[in-house]
Image 1 (tube, helix red, strand yellow):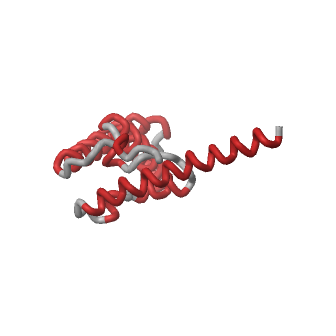
Image 2 (cartoon, one colour):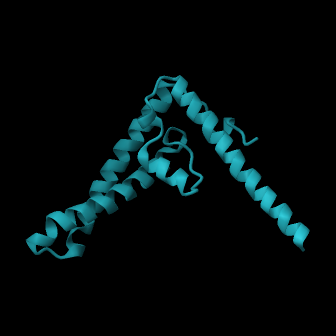
Image 3 (cartoon, rainbow, N blue to C red):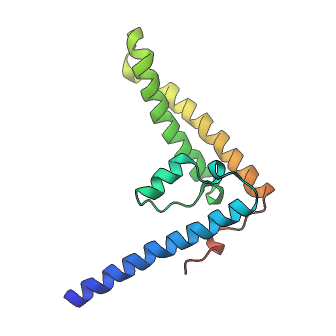
Amino acid sequence: MRRFLRVRTVNFVIVIMEFHSQLHRSLAVLSQRGLPRIRYEPPLFRLLWKIGVEVPPPHYMSFAKIAISYGAWFAVFWWSFMWMLVWSRQGRAMDDDVLGAVIAGAFFGLIMAWFYERDRKKLRLPAWESFDRG
């Protein structure tokens, strides 16, 4: 039993190391194409990588995944920010403004997805899968 657990741990560590290797190779390509670091390593993604979420850089994600992830992030934080600073003082109910936050998040997500899609085509980036693990 102990031997089995040791093998599983080693395999888990190898998978994590393979993702980090794949991530570093893809970031090197983005850097070589002349993008500033803030564009290919956005703060949200740096945070996700630090907490262990295995997500590729946004330039290597699909249009839909970018739109959903950026849109959801923006909607939650924009709604929270606006509620604390403006809407709560106006006496508005919390749930009245959720739809507005969702619409704002959808627009932001679509704009960011278009932005990364445009960069991906302009820079002729290889597919994420081409940075095979290993």
